[in-house]
Length: 392
Ligand code: FAD
View 1 (cartoon, rainbow, N blue to C red):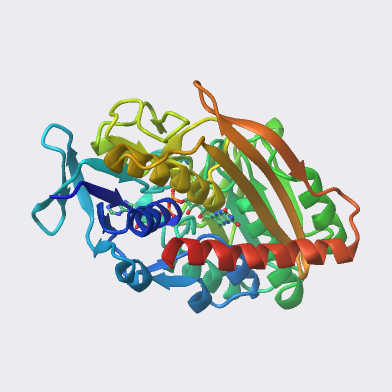
View 2 (view 1 turned 90 degrees about the horizontal axis):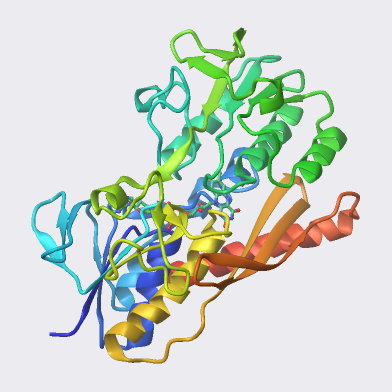
């Protein structure tokens, strides 16, 4: 029969890879996508939902377009990978054989990363760092917050999914509170001494949300944090604060199936930059957040960019089609307030050692309102473009 590609995870990396291989191989390669959810809710723009700029329905995408473009979509969990027999086991029973396996399972959380928090606390103290119901829960808690009370965030250590994500979220929470609960306070306990686009966020917070946001970075003990989900307290360096919402974003690692497949080294899965193949197994590829690839941030844009390089390489390996030199790009936009968008981005190339940054750009402080609005509109165009690129 024809060569078979199995893709685990139908997110930014996996959906793109599945769609491109199916589309470009014109039936020469069989593509099966394994993804448990029937509706994928993007994490990208989920902060805009929290800020009231998007509805949850606008963030949901189904797999009908992929099925229509020839991808065999299986809604199930992959529970194991047998690298000798080259099969993926499914939670619902049975297994799927592959010639090439692409893993793009996103992230899981490092156990014990925040003292007092584990997955059983995620309803009291949501992470909202996977799309869908967690995001809805966090917004419901924000809306139920009594006047003048405290919203806390425990930010994650590097490396993690979407470097500016926690700080865009704080901006969107502040935007909501300014209109609905103006005497409320936001406290961020951060294990890092600095963070992505810090000068831009700090300028925006001072201009738009003066006096509301207190960032406690690692120099001041922000890394020395514990929470108590029953008492609803946050403790920083031994000082205990009562909080009303506590958004705990723990340290991250590759989605568990990457560990089960034996392609991780520590928390992440090392890959070769030119095709995203695993350093542990030439027939397995790892995309997106789960991959340890070098200089690219963990973002949807990065995962989509890596998926196209991988799809081209996998198709070439299986059918002899032309393989182009690997080129990657990324931009991370963040919304600070209405029509006030900022961005950071770069282009990358593959070296022997890693995905290496070539050239970068970042928004400046003090930009005009007009430029910030244009930047926000660019992000809207990007969202429409990437979701069409993923799902058809
Ligand atoms: P995902 O998109 O998470 O896809 C993983 C998929 O794998 C999931 O659908 C999951 O159900 C599935 N899966 C997991 N395990 C299994 C298994 N065992 N079997 C089968 N399926 C499995 N990125 C941007 O580029 N721009 C942004 O503005 C942006 N904003 C963000 C804001 C927030 C608040 C957050 C949290 C993230 C943001 N991101 C943004 C980051 C972006 O969402 C991720 O980097 C991106 O989704 C990574 O793609 P992925 O394919 O690695 O993982």
